[in-house]
Length: 249
Image (cartoon, rainbow, N blue to C red; front, side, top):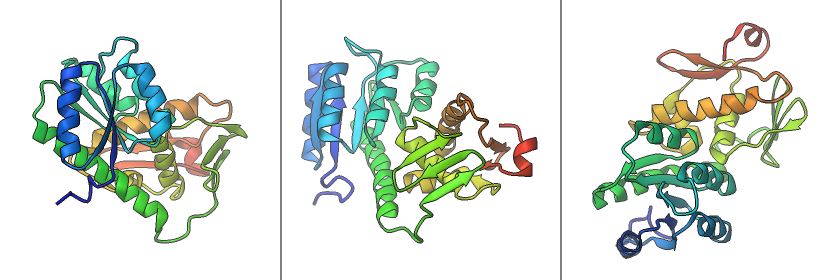
């Protein structure tokens, strides 16, 4: 019986080693996934536009692209989760992968059962978000405004001081969650539930990494953004009004 998490889920496997690519494809397809493989960064960009996958498994060491740069590019192109699967032992690569949009990182050599478990966990988050978006508990406001920041939900568009911001899908959902509750502190688990529809033991560091990237983009805008304030040991809030004048992002 096919696991419902796997049923109809599509995976883009970006791996330049033909042996590893063939083995993973056979295992994943035998477990109910639809898999397409790309051996280069150029192929990955073409295929992600064509198939709009649910999940991307990405090797960092490719013949024609920096895997970290490609991770960020693919995240911006598609609303797909990304698992980095790499032989790199550098802590820096793991940290940068999360900051650039990856949802998980598993090192090579890996245990296939562990990889499958991580894939299922990531897809549960994705499916939970999609279900929440199609059947919301209450109709969201068509616009959220916090100071000069405006979120147009009907067009999935964010502007700051009238200038559009280029956000990844995860950054967009995270900003929406914060802006819907200005000056209200949300825990990392609450944010993860709203962003991914699922919160697990490793969610705190992932939320921290995405918050860091979101702050950089907000602070790079010409208009002053409403600050995202850290509450030590708990979570984050987006400040407006009097709180925004004294908050430190």
